[in-house]
Length: 231
Image 1 (cartoon, one colour):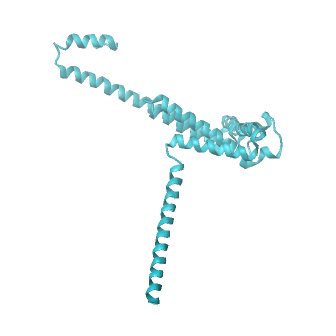
Image 2 (tube, one colour):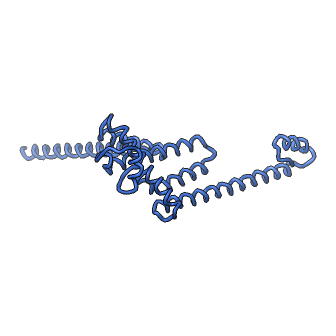
Image 3 (cartoon, helix red, strand yellow):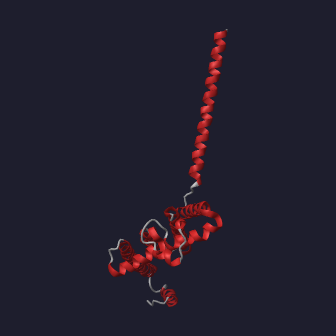
């Protein structure tokens, strides 16, 4: 059989009256099985390669990867600050998610991009918690080079803070960052944050109604007892 799909279809159509159908189907299933096996092997290879890359990135953050690791460490801390410890895990998750959902590339890409967006927003949150940007004014180079120590969001977090703080203030920046991070997590996990709160409030309302009903019953019973005593 030829590897060309069109020619293979012509050959199969020509031979369907000569070769029994179950033989042709067996050959077709064999080709499909072989292709699936090759795709599975390719996926495993890619996953292993990116796993190795993620491990090297994490070791570089811990300053355990030699000279190359030192360069990677400075880049990760310069961009993401304290969240440089999280970046290798995010990278590995993104690759595995894309590979495992290759049949739905657009949906997988939207989730991965949302994950990256949420990660960058978290850089801004960490920058606010660290308080570095509120102690003084930094330029781009200073944000990058002063991110290897202390709690900070690196160049990304500093840029986001400097972009929002003059317009909506520190508290407004907190609100925007937290809401955006929660929205990203909800989109990725597809789990509502509001529903548990709504369920909790509903349970509290039902409990309050039940307590009120019991209180009314007790008051009615007490008033009935008083009437009996008076009689």
